Structure formats: C-alpha cells, structure tokens
Image 1 (cartoon, rainbow, N blue to C red):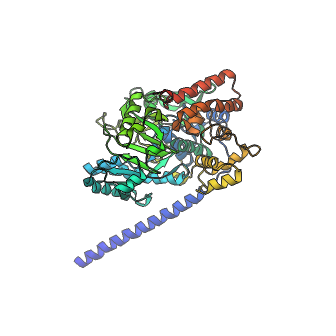
Image 2: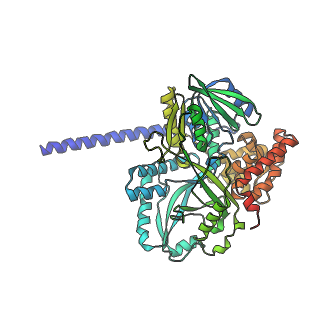
Image 3: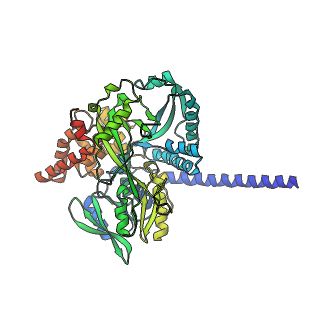
Length: 594
C-alpha cells in the first residue's frame, strides 16, 4: 500500500513537473515570437499626426475607449488598449505627464518600506506588492533602455548590530526579484563607504549595504509611452481638456472637450471611458455619478536638487529614518543630485509650488547626513519641485477611510472606469488590469491579449551604449551633444540629421549642450507646443537648474514664435506662462539671495 502511494505521489509530481515544463516552453516560445513581432524599428520618417488632424479624427469617429489623463497610467492604458486592437483616443488637459508623473523621485523600485513592513508583520499583501513592482521594474528597463537603467544604492549602517538585519532584508529583496533581478546586494566596510561617499557623516559609521533598483527619466518615459501608442494607432492630443462627460440615459457615451490652444469646443464619442487623471480623479468620477464620495487623499512630495558633489559617486543613497519617519533618498540624475522626499497633506492643484518650509526641511535633513554641513546653503539649491501623490481610499471596502495599498479600479457607471493609486513602477500592470476590466465591462472585442511587456518604446529598437559614438561620427556633432541626443531620443537621434544646416549646430544654453535643433525636433516629432513643454519635459533643465531654464526662455520663445507664427502678443503670453511654470520648480527661492 505504501509502495503504491509512493508511486502515485511520484507520478503526480512527475506529471506536474511535465506540465510546468510544457507550459514554460509554450510561454518561452510565445514570448520569443512576440519579441520578434515588435522588434522591427519604426521608420525615421514616422511622426505623430498633426494637432489639427488628431482633433479632426477625434471629432469624426466613435472610439472603443477614451482615456482621460495622459500621465503614466493613462499613456500606459492607451498603449495597452491600442496594441490589443482597440481604437483609442487619449487626451490631457495639459502636456503629457505635466503633473505628478514628471515630479517623482526618478526611481523604479520595489519599495524597501513595503518590504520592511512585510517582514515586521509578516504581511503577505506587502510581499506581493514588492514582488510585483520588482518584476515590473525589469520590464520597464527592457522596453526603454535609453530612459531607464539600474542604479546601485547605498544604505549606511551606523550600528553593527543592524548589519545582519539590513543584509538579510536586502537579500530577500534580491530573492523576490527572481529571474528579473538587476543586481545582487552586498556589504562594504567603513573605508570603502567613505571612498564612494566622501561627504558621508562618519561618526559611528560601520559600513553600508549596496543594493540595486532602477532609475528613469520619468517625463520622457511618459512621453514615449504616449507617442508609442500613437505609432501603434492611438489618436492622442495634449492640451485638450474634458469639460464634462456626455451621457445618454445616464450612461457615458463620450466627453465634451475644449482645445486649450484654439479655444474650440468639440465632442469625442466612445463606447467606454477610462479616468486616469491622478490627483484630479474625483472631478471626473463625480461628473459620471454625483452621488460618489471622494476617494483621493492628496499627499505632497517635495524634492530639492543639489550639485552632485553632495552625494556618493555614481550611486544612490538612502537613509531609512528621517525626523518625520520617512525615507530620504539622494539620487544622482543628469549630473546633479536629487534629495527627497517629504510627505504632507495638501489640497489638489495644478503646478503646486514647494513651500520654503518644505525646502528648508530637506536642507536640514540633508545636513544631518553629511560632513561639513555648513557647505550646504540655501544658495546651493538648483531647483525644487512638489508633486501630488493621489493616495486613494478603496470604495469597495467597508472602512471607507482606509487607504488602498495598491491601485484601485472602480466602475463608476456602466461606461466609465476609474484607475487610480499605484505608483510609477507598476504603471504597466495597472494599465493591463484596467484594460482587462474595460474589455469585460464594455464588452469590447480585441485581437490579442496584453503584449506591453514585449513592445519597445520609440527610440529603443536598436539602441545600445555605443550609439552615441556613431551619432557623433555620422552627424558630426560634439560628443556631449551626441550623448544628450542619444539619452533623450535613443535610436531616433539619427533624425536630428534633418535639422542640422551647414554642418553646424546652434546652442541655446551657455551651460548645457542643448541646441536649436532640439527645439525644432521636439516641435515636429514630440508634440511640444509651449515653451514649458521643452524646458521642463522634452529637456529637463527646469528640474535640474531652474535659473538656467529661465535664461533659456528667450531663445526657445523665438524658435517657437517662428514655427507657430505667434504674434508678439501671443509670444508675451507664452513667455509669461513659462515663467509661471518655473515658479513651481522653485524659481523664486533659487533667484532670491539668502
């Protein structure tokens, strides 16, 4: 009897192993075929539809889906839906990613805070969040390698007793990454820590644990999601504001929109609507159903930008316990150093400005972590910004005051879905879940399941680290300019050849290698319409050096005036708007002599 039982168990295990092998083999074959299908590089002649053509298409047809909000989750939804074979319109009241999605810490991470809670309380739901985010982190690096990369991060240890705790915790972080790992954590002693981070506070320092997370250019990654959806057939437009949801018999059938550039009002018809407006989620929700209660709990996160010398060499830094109980990051980014972030209750507003108190708090916290803190003065700050995190209450829970740990998907009426919460790292999974729900709720027909794991974003198809030398040689430009172009545009950088006249490029900054050719390229190929589109999001100068961005307004304005045929009056309006945008990046604080 025991022998038969052993045979039975052995057969079951062997059968299960065989099933898993066949299943893995099928998935490997399917994934390989999908990678081949989407590997072909788009022609350099491709450009998004003109603004007029996009809006005319929006007015003239009914779409399967209208996505309202062009941040990370909205642009991710547009790409997911259109590559399943659905017809999609995507609109944003501002520029793509102009709010929360461009004001992150620039990290793609699993969340070491979530892991700490998971370990402390053995909370399986927290483990699941970390596991999902770590796997999504790798997918983003794969589909946009010129905009995302792995980053070593130093976690200092000031108590020898804590070395095993941090080491084991970060080894668990590695293990949860599984086959999607981007690097293994390790311990280094005090002397090596100081060698990498000379300005670190040295009193009682035992060493540090180094682990890996991802880093990105959030605004450009957001933009490439939107443009890649356009390449695959979505009709997209920035500066189109939804004024109200169209209804027939209390069922959403589209939206009344206003073109904020021309002032024209028009209607977009659709079989379903996905609300991905981040902090502004509740305004759309209540337009579809006035009886709904607010679910967004806005929280602001402020960052400051410093010279890179205040942080480690080519490495991030994380301190696990600030005076207000948060984690403080130092992140090297675009040859500068980001320090952040805060976590304060706030109201919902566009382009929020960081307060002096928030900036001073980050300065003080940074001073506690470095040697020679008096070197860090208020005049050292290069930029400061504040993003609003749309934390959400889960409307399906009995306790309506508790915050959702993950993203939520809510059907607000028969034809409208709200996607909110979550974080940048998991935008792709959030979009996949939302489109799955939309297909089921709105009874839409698709040609294939979600394939966004396999779709390279524009600029990624033939990108590699040697490309900048080929760009330098073939386009005959300085190496620093070539580096800028490749890190911004990937393999689309070759298209800049069309903008170089008489083998000469024209710089528009006295400090940075940014050119007139960049401005013209982003207008023609990346839907840049306003001065702030260029100096804040096509190039990130406003985020790393707000004063230099201010000085660039004049030259950028002259190029846009010529391209868009602005009147003198219109040019003055655009310049004023650009200055107001820079105020949300700490312009007044940085211009002031402290």
